[in-house]
Image 1 (spheres, rainbow, N blue to C red):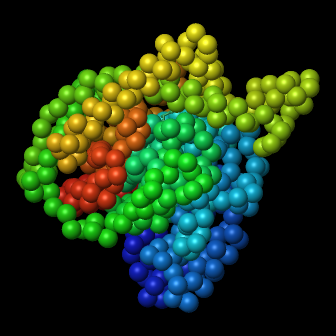
Image 2 (tube, helix red, strand yellow; image 1 turned 135 degrees about the vertical axis):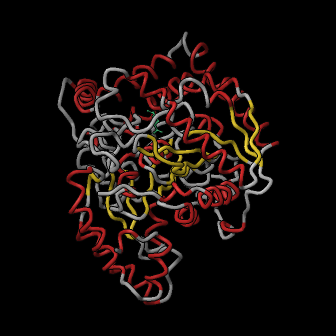
Length: 482
Ligand code: GLN
């Protein structure tokens, strides 16, 4: 079946004319029509648009001008601006909003002739870890439809895990690519901060946000990373040598590699079922020649606390622009302030409003030093702690999520429990370094992800290691039956 092929396999078949871009796009559209009513991965799909893009991609292929992934379909999280297509961030405050420009990543995909399949479901403004905070529809884990897929990029993870798309993009501020990848049993990669442009990504927490891919294999994730990375003068935090070259992906070895195990990520907060799969994987990798060493990073204990100060603080500032004047619908009230208050009060969801209030509080005079500044200091310490480890080790190894997928609604009454699920993923955002999640196996029939983290700008090495780890793990390629 076309929809089961990897992105790289599809690209090869497209280049050799074994299949056309239209056939591939149509196969994915059929699969979406068949399954998405139950999965809830997509917020917008326009079949006419998809087929038009596929026809354009075919022209590129016919002229021999295509790139490595020309004609391959890709789904996009609904917080990336797409010219002519809705971009709602799964919020009522951006209902029917159609951006007048493409995010830089979207422009790169279009230039390379990838086919945009549609916009995926997410937690409103990427705030959450379950995709249950979407203002539009619920999203279901393909391994068990009664479970959450994780989040906030849940729709993008479900699309790939359920073979509704071979590839997708998400955004990761505190784990929103890696955690849903882990809960859905696929590969999710957060590149080094600054390697993929944030221009046109609706900002949540600008110093932490990073766009990255989901795929069903490390090879696919590496291939799409080459397409989306690169310097962009529209993004002031874009790195000068941002472009990736993963042509050496398969040249690595695990023999003699040194992985650090931070004991703070193997403690009592991690589910026993997750720990046992991770320990089995460690044993497997030891046989491949990896040397594991336990280390301690005490600042990890503060990770969740500082994240839930810094991210809301930046969000409170970033979301000030949604006042009902420039974007989305407007609810009239008493004058400008009254209208803005009504629009924001009625159209932002509860979680978004809570974060705006926490962030405003943390930044207010008298509290700034005690909260925001202090959190930034701990962040700097955490980044240094990891830098020291990366000077000695090839990678840091841990679970991606402390728990497997949970039942939809199960954590509604316990918002702290949901936030604690970000424990293992937050450090990479704080330090800006790259991190990837791979499926390590199943616990109670649900996927368990392992995470590899590497030094800033070490993305290619990290992907090379991840590729070798994936080859050593039989569980990396198991798929849900749908
Ligand atoms: N779960 C985290 C939060 O709720 C991370 C979100 C993200 O990475 N976008 O903020």
